[in-house]
Length: 216
Image (cartoon, rainbow, N blue to C red; front, top):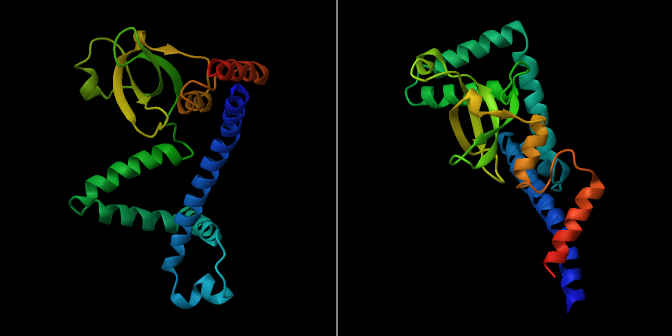
């Protein structure tokens, strides 16, 4: 019975990550294949080739992004983008949504952007409980004048989905900078603390074996 249990967990350790990875990739491919619908019917790859080939939408989406990037990287493109931004910023409701999303995307994807600057430890959700957070900046003057002492703007991600979380203004003295890169800290958060940056593969294997023995 113990051997069957051991084999079951060993099989799950192999299959679960593989199934999730395949499922995510399949969802991405199917979603990007929908971009082909913007093409005229006679230009659809399925019509031209006579057969449906999964993944063509990925290539098409990549080409579209590269073309748009090339067009907006020159003087004329910048002028057109400025005109487009100005137009959308004059439309009620659309203005507030578009400007907020654009500011976030500029921060995340711009070559000069620096969304997450450092990995920190902060006390959250109560004093004495610590979590990983990311330094995003400092409070603006209109906010800082109401705060006592130096504060930092930090983003506290949720686990295992770091795209949702909380923005907080924390005293600089209450933040501890950790010896992790931003990528390592994100991995730490996504893995729910299982993958510890800097640990050797042998040490991780020993931890996995010990955890498996506990289940037996």
